Length: 453
Image (cartoon, rainbow, N blue to C red; front, side, top):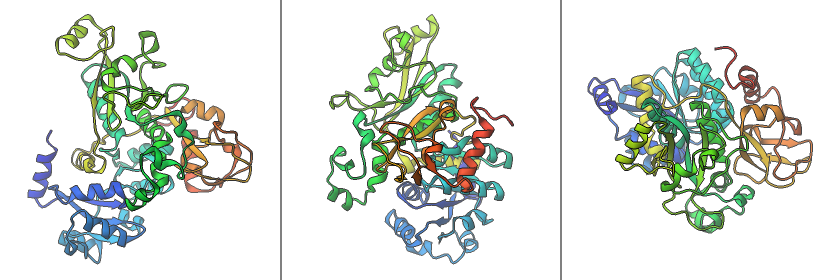
């Protein structure tokens, strides 16, 4: 409740939080639109592979051109302007930057950026949930060892879910389930960039005019992004995936407590303490009444006669037994809310969610029959989608993490719907991201917790 007051104080003292942003895409641009209106924050630099694109993004969201002419990060810090550059490592190393935001979406780049932040003592806000799903537990541990804060990004659904879980637990409730809403049908797992737009009610021409990336939007549709985000939530909260992964039950906000409680209590969960995503459409394609497509939720238990009576007295919607109820947030504002993480990390030294164990993993799964010699094209592509699994199960089958299923060639045929395994692909064991992921598997193992704490 005090973040804005603390930011105003930093502004009054002339000591703004000094921010470096890596990646000026959609999420980064949304943050940029708010950063210039937030007291106590100075965007020192933006690193993007195409600095001119970053400049266009800044101008589009309202930054004055005169604020973008700094010739160095030192000049930007001195004059209160912003430096545009194409070298993320230089941005991280700069003494003028204290908080780094990774908004790249590249798992391998994200790992490299966090490790650089550890070396240079920079706090990091990880919009890059793809990297977190691939190796977040070890990244967070390395950050703790380096004395820096590693944080999930507020505005993205995982951090909002973590906040709701923390609220419920801090109030003394057992969390029964937590997750988000999305639009889902089983057939979406087979969607490709060539088939995605009709599912969104768009033509390819409309999407092109809107500057929409087909592979990125397909990752939201085919279940991959949901799996990635729920892995991040599981690893940050201790909630576990079901053994069969995400079920995507159709469910509106009035039915959360009834659907998202255990099967033995009349619901659809495999166990208490589960991550799950609810669908905004019924299996026959009809819209769910009062759906949660853009929001997040938590269900929790009363577990006493007194608390159940309080639920009734204060009008909470419960399951039929009266023991389970829910809270939800109907929307998330993505990059427009990212400043909450920046302020929490910079002022309180507290993350808005961070992995502390390895419970969930995202395994590359064949969208169709894949033949030996084919090259996988990763998240949202033509060949694989991401399936959420308990990490112990992923290890047991040798599942290839979705974050590494890019530009690797199959050695074996993989039937549609089957997981791709490490042994199915030709992969460079010396690649930095591959080596880091393998180190995480050894460090955390099937127990899900680090052997070296």
